[in-house]
Amino acid sequence: MNDLKKIGLDAVPAVGLGTWGIGGKTMPDHSKDKQWVEAIKYAINNGMWLIDTAEFYAQGHAEELVGEAIKGFKRDEVFIISKVWYTHLEREQVLQAAERSLRRLSISYIDLYLIHWPNERVPLRETLSAMQELIDKGKIRYAGVSNFDLQLLLKAREEMPRSEIVSDEVKYSLWHREPEKDLLRYCEKEKIALIAYTPIEKGSIANENFLAEIGKKYGKTAVQVALNWLIYKEPVIAIPKAEKFEHIREDAGAMGWRLSPEDYKAISDKYKL
Image (cartoon, rainbow, N blue to C red):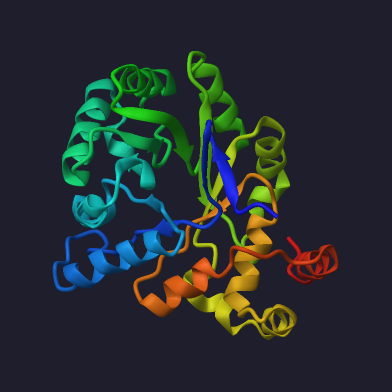
């Protein structure tokens, strides 16, 4: 059993914290800033020290909250993922977006920087050349993509020969198993991290009685079973979003144990593609 996964040369937790909705969604919301900062700190202290954010989230306010939350930690005690929005994929835009994210996060480098969504109007080569420039300057450590299907991921790897594309962040859950058609197998073979967002379907999976029944064997909840099912697969890292301490504890409790092969198969068969 190993609850550390690989992103590039780094070992990171199998369950991290997503921040979409923290600090607002498409607009900043300052009403619960203190609560959100404490939630991020709590996640880090409970083993979820991989934090996923983006410049798009609350127009950068999510990054500001992450930056505030991590001030009390040593830089190598957290692994920060951020993303450049699809309207900022020209070379200069990428470089400027990264600088803005660094300022909001109050850090000197981003561990993993992702293209948030593909944009066919901007050549991938141009975007990835800028990402390589950021790596060369020490502004980011790794480059990755998000919402790329297998064909686009293959193209991205071709367009960035000097550095590896180390991850692809996609929607993946028991209810949404599209990545299993081809992307997951490829990521497993090539040792590329597959980062699963919306892994518990905004909490709705908590209502699955089948998962709750299996969870009783392990003293775990339906949510914890659903997350454990995801991270059972070697390349998969789950990033549920949570604000309340009890939900963060629950998400963190998906680590430190493993479903039996029989239960893993039963769950897989129950929620077929």
